[in-house]
Length: 250
Image (cartoon, rainbow, N blue to C red; front, side, top):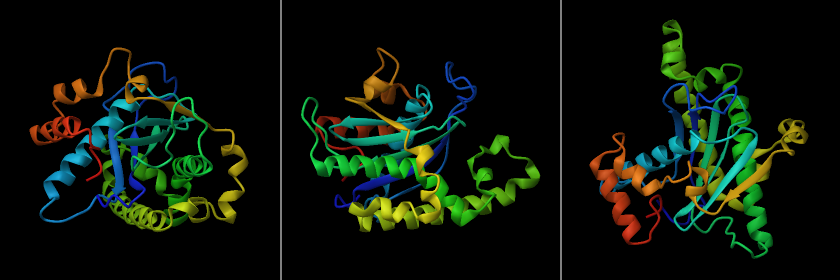
């Protein structure tokens, strides 16, 4: 990924946690679709594949423990992850560059960091509504896993997801082009009418990803034990850890 990009990835996940959120997911968590700004080239395609696999794996693990109604933020040396499930079993994830919305524990955040944190919250709260403006009333069909969709609607879902991905990629490109004006690019006059109900959503910051997982779990060990990740992605994660570098930023 071009390290000048503030926003690396936006994606949606079917968590299967509703309605209680007090139990394990009823089914395996599913990545529905997403968009990314990781650099694409023939030379780096295998690195990009590993990066996206690791992002997806991490988001799925976080889905297993999230609670609805709060924007969670994870402050890590390797970058930041912001996510929200409003309570309907659909979680929105945002991965940003390491320097975005930097917060040092025990130190008052700078005005720029506060502004960037607000930008991240705006994205995870409003991006679904932004897509709904473009896709219309059929957008909820894109938030169903394949096994939840009636076979007769399968083709329609594929077409809607393709359109939604195009719109999401275009949106990601816009906010990366002007990261200081996320709110203006995300919340128009129509969306502003529902802002009051979303303003009550709180941000919960975790110092490390371990705080957001089950007690005793470690993301590095989960990666190495996973049968969902390729050997290439596991090796990439191990090398990134040795170099103390971000697994999502080149």
